Length: 475
Ligand SMILES: Cc1cc2nc3c(=O)[nH]c(=O)nc-3n(C[C@H](O)[C@H](O)[C@H](O)COP(=O)(O)OP(=O)(O)OC[C@H]3O[C@@H](n4cnc5c(N)ncnc54)[C@H](O)[C@@H]3O)c2cc1C
Image 1 (tube, rainbow, N blue to C red):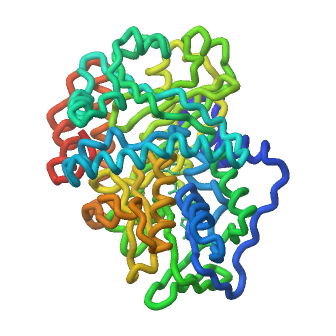
Image 2: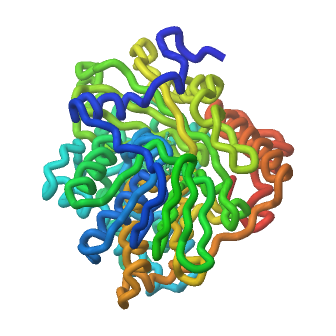
Image 3: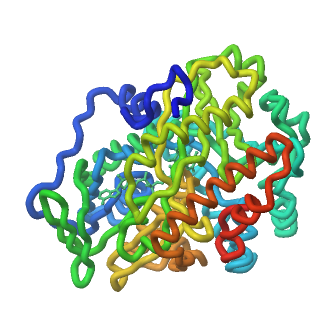
């Protein structure tokens, strides 16, 4: 399905973010692939934020360790160079965390996760990485004409814990002052959130790692990893032996032995407009605020310093049996849905020209919360399951992973969720069929509510099925 006459086919080139970041970076040679036999103290698999933050914190904690990072593409070539650039912690997850780990542990986790916002800003300043960091807050808007917002429970529980200021309900006129759209009703403000140019952060991390002596091999796909004894990694053209490994492969974990039954890959797609600073000024949307709607298949949108809108939505399809292929990069139907959501939420911009579209996989676990822990007798450490919210929390994951490798006592490695697994998902092909059916039901139910219609009983039943089975997915 063609979504917009002006849009290129998604997946044919790198995301707009990554092209912009690499143009700003200038001529930078790719890191050579691994060939032959190599040794490391720690091997990091995955050159996204999680792997690169882990490598960065390892250089802080163990400056003499030989750290080798293997990336199948280029660093930042995956979702870390393609995402919306919304940086925030886990305040919205506090009710879940309280139910699972108790109030004290939940607040401790949320505080550490909150560090990522100021931490990324300070890190960019320290290392002179211009990632367009702006701490302008995040407003989730209620855009359903006939449905009350769904955040009262979360707000009440945060207030009861003395954390009411983290998520503040705001009236419709306050939402309109942020961005004047007839589709918006009331909203929920998260003041602590920041925006970044995601690929500039990823490429900045890569530069700093190289400066610190981390060995990076790009275009190096890990084919197998064994951890019975020293860690032995096999790639297409080489082998590497290490004392320990960090596995930071995000949605690709859905194809790894040991993780594939806990992670589902799901597609998220984005479009970006031409620069329209005058139109943004008419809407009053000049403060750099992040915005999203309150759907499960969330639409998220933000501005850029040159006056564009980058707009995304989690409307892509689920993957099959851990294969990360064209479903996540070339899905024209998903792009058409993103464009429809854009036109629906910002109807006054119906004539704004869209310049680019791209997508990527996000990693969903049964409770939509990451799993970070160790396996293979403590020699392999892993982090994945950010559910499309890893731009900030991947920094916390990197701190935890580095602490797990280091092994010296550190409160961050003892946060209650570390080492706790997420629920098992149904086996294939049941998972694939179920995920596709539920996704379609979720989108159709939201479309009906948006249009002021009552969704059918069947749609509602399918959209609620995962919750009935104990997953924190769907409505
Ligand atoms: C369109 C889109 C929009 C998003 N928007 C937001 C947002 O606004 N805010 C937010 O918080 N999050 C967002 N996310 C999610 C966010 O991008 C991720 O949570 C985050 O980038 C995770 O970082 P990571 O390092 O764990 O994963 P990745 O960036 O995916 O890095 C994993 C890396 O591992 C590599 N790899 C995989 N398998 C192998 C192998 N066998 N050998 C070698 N290398 C391998 C991959 O190539 C990849 O580069 C979005 C995601 C998408 C797709």
